[in-house]
Image (cartoon, rainbow, N blue to C red; front, side, top):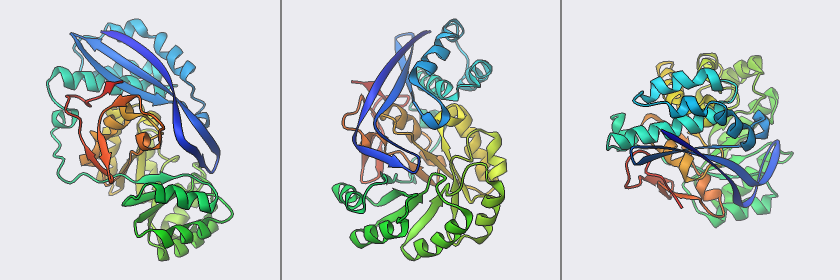
Length: 336
């Protein structure tokens, strides 16, 4: 098996701002695995919050190139278990590799990945479209630029309620709120009351990730469901989120790929948690991998390609929140 690593700077349509940072360019690493005339593709984007860069991911993969390329017939689960000890400090790189291997494995089997997992796609959830923090006028403008059935609204400002009130005047869509660790306990409980009146479906990660006492209080007192993001990174975090959150938002890059994400989804559902997978502004490479998990999810945030000025790949197509799968097997990705 041959390993090929590419890097891209994904230019965004608009400056994308959350409570802790703003970006106009999203660096991304694409992994291609080639074997027997077939190729599988995976992706991981850089992230300063987790101290991950494309050069770091590239170096970490290069350090085990011979181990990767010696793989022959292992299942994705066996491959992940073999590689994990060498990349446990860089789960982003492991994600791109695992994604590519799953894609390649399914292509060799002549099936789309969700078919290989035997998941029907008749009741797939639709994806939200994210509105980053900006002036109220700009946020309204971004929302009206792309009418959508569900919006995720990034908050963590001094005028959060005013923002949602103004957006609600312009749309009857479902609203989801993501504060990215930007609120306190009392603020969250108070905001939830007002936001419920404004038709908000749930709150995502309002408190700092390690504030478990605060999460427990909000879980008990919030009038809106609360979904974990920064508090749910790896498999061991799922059980910790039980009785602290109503659901979990799994990010493939944070947990190490599709293989552990599937285990996290299964455990979350067993515990009665709502399951969601989110994106990190990936191209259609990463988003097409997320799409394979849709039958197992309650919610999904996979709007990455919609936020880009130009995509680097063809894959799943998203129209009005609904996903149409690519024709090809695996994840169906084709690099442009």
